[in-house]
Image (cartoon, rainbow, N blue to C red; front, side, top):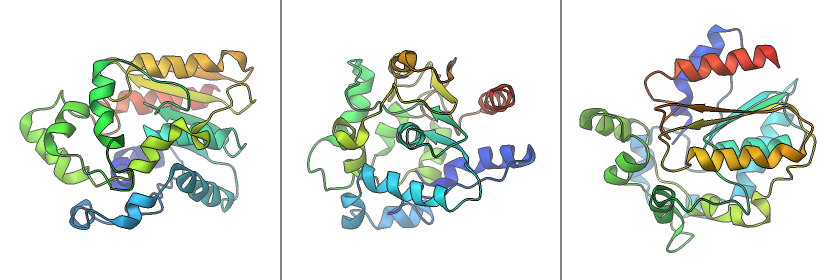
Length: 243
């Protein structure tokens, strides 16, 4: 997806007095989703790696006058974890975080949801179709809501970012001291099962830093755009105020 997916959360946190930034990934994520879909397959998008994305956000963070609070979803959650071990955040919120190097789930839903995004030619961008989106993201919505969400948000994606966390660039040093981190999971998430998020959280048990885990009932991988997301943003705000 593109930064459009963060629009409601930006509105929420701005109303609470925060300045927000939602910069796109460095390639293939700027502009209207309908126009980005027309470019598929975009060869440049297909070459984009996790390392490039992390460096892109590292540069943006270093341009700011103060350390930001980082919020990332799915692969963005892993990127939050990677940026935090570089001492680049005041705090972090990893929502339905993709697993770092060496961590995997063998649940059928995890394998079914993720395999198409990493199989085949790794330099060929992946464009999720409606059926795959319905299964992995929005299985609790009506058919009409599923179609509307697909048309509004879904864009082609690089396979390199999802495939490479099994390499060094996706490794998290769980023992490294960091600022407070909140890890959020959805009980109905098929792409990143809540149990995998819990494994990710538990890996920080060797760390003296504050790491909090919260699982939300009835939330899917579409948690950022799902109805009732105020429950999630309210929890984040309260956690930030209490940390």
